[in-house]
Length: 178
Image (tube, rainbow, N blue to C red; front, top):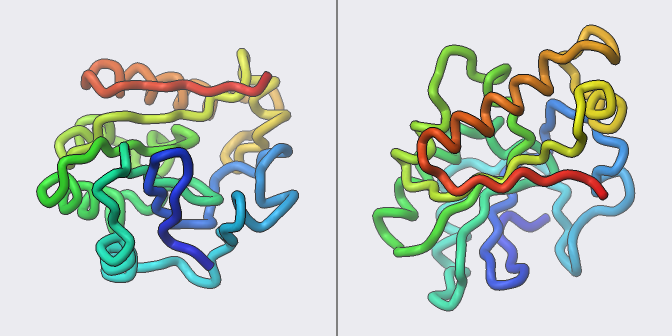
């Protein structure tokens, strides 16, 4: 089990295995990790565990710190992402990126998560849009919150989060399958 690992100049923080999607193409359906890193968490790490491992492995040469997981990183918004982003941005001068499926509108209704992320020091968001329409998205990503395959609600939440991040002047990267 690895909480902190390095890929292509980035320091990745593996903070959760929980996800609100059950994507057909998800890494966890095929293997336990990336490169030589086993990313299946035996338990969800707490803030102190991630911070201690971050500090012990920190390398000044990294280009960015990335919150991710074999799951939805923003599920850990209040207990890990916001407080740790603030600590990292106050202590180190590194870009902070969040990898997310964009379901924050469902997970945390009524909050401006894009603003909260920016205020905590996050500068970039990578959002897995994965499809050009809601039907294909629902087939590929199998979100837990949909009523049926024709339900556009989750896909619309993802698109709204992309717009909210852009409105907050965060760098936004929306990814899709080829």
